[in-house]
Image 1 (cartoon, rainbow, N blue to C red):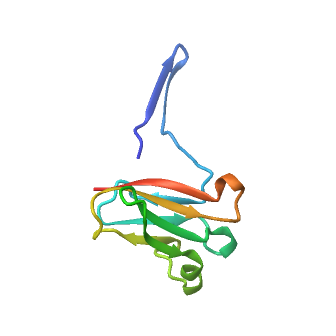
Image 2 (tube, rainbow, N blue to C red):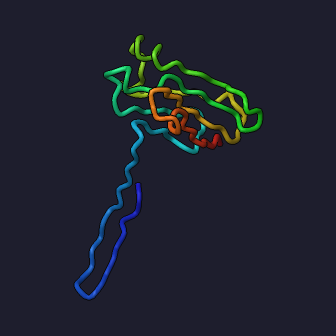
Length: 120
């Protein structure tokens, strides 16, 4: 949650709660991570709206540590809380990781989105 922002001028004072939006159809939370994190999708009704794969990389080894085939989760209807994929990372060393969201249906520059994660 963000703190309210207050602005004043000769006409008076206004207080607002800032809202930030992205064009991404998913969000990753929490970050920093302690034991688990989720990739929460806006829409899980259609496979076409989802990426193909999620890969978790270690910054140190640059190797894939976990892979989730989203089609398999979709077909098995095994989303957590109806719209999320959960990663259990309590067994991993603390440090920096990258989640690659792979979606070959997107434009060339958007096929792989990389999200930096901190495991504390």
